[in-house]
Length: 451
Ligand code: URP
Ligand code: ZN
View 1 (cartoon, rainbow, N blue to C red):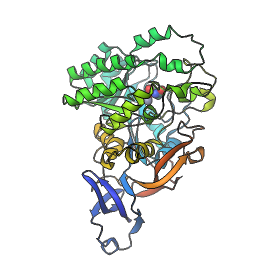
View 2 (cartoon, rainbow, N blue to C red):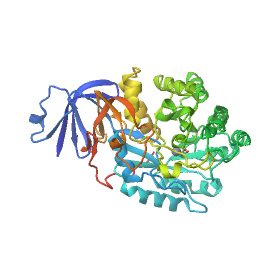
View 3 (cartoon, helix red, strand yellow):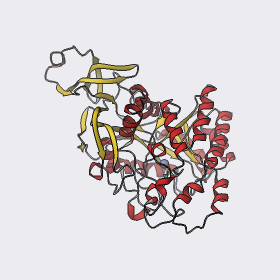
View 4 (cartoon, protein in one colour):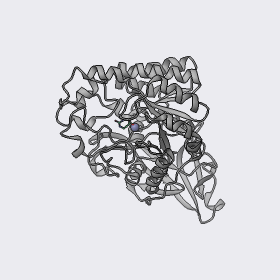
């Protein structure tokens, strides 16, 4: 079956062009001039009229947690998370596998891939090193055989806190085999700040105040130094502070393109003010929300493309698990996979003048390139997967709980006014979302090998 997408403003790698896209067998088969008669060239083909809307490559969210991460259940599993992703134009995600106590790395990958069988988006996996990484490092060849070349490590997190020496050990092994995503917050600074707060404090701003900007800055500089020394391609996960944005600017000016940043919409939109009061627990994640100056500096960094990968760290918990906790017991993580592309289309493209090409790079191509999924993903090109999202700049709307396509019972973006809207998502040549209604089948996504 051949489908032609006509009358769209396709965002190609080198510019926006009015073209017709021919989709066949799940791939983009041809890109034709708008005056080509597609019905004559492909008799009987299905026609999708994009009505002058932007047509972009399906989004690639490089950082999601679809279920099964800790002891508290994440609200979205692979299927409901996929539906949320597709509702917002994202067709590919990168999730995580992290071995439990004594668990064999291959067993953990097998279990996670099994979980991913329900996915309706295509997905790849990061492998997360634990404090037991010395047992895991010799298994790197087996992990690579499983199609995983994206590694993750933390400077501070339960069971996964690693010191600079540990990073050195890890990077010496993986530097020529894959990429490293690092959650960077210096533990000793946070430990010292925690001594100043009463542990029972229900004031959630304590989460932010005990994890200050300097904790991120020190951790980023430390792993960056080791990455430089070992020649490792490093991405800082969910960059949250003006200091981290400044470090990337400095490195970029010096020509270091092996070091990049990932960040998420919540760090540009919200501040620790949202963490005040009884609903503050609903805005908790790590690293935490910070000051307005940080949010503004991060949006500036987006406009300059100093942030390469706009992902979400989608990790939503139901209200019952968030409310009534304290800053040390609250399960951290918020939603975002559905609103990510919508948010940047509205706030960066339409309100602040970001180009559509840059929007595509940061929401799709850069993640596909960093994780070795390009050009199968992240680009509208002949031979690439026929994953597309349509964005209509003329629609203004407010995101409400009725729009939520996943299983979350609240959203940090509830009530948020948006300009422009993702009106249709195509995955593998099939329309899987139209005007907010997701029709993708459970299990229609496939596991992707990173390279
Ligand atoms: O608070 C967060 N971000 N939860 C998810 C775990 C992580 O750090 O990626
Ligand atoms: Zn995460």
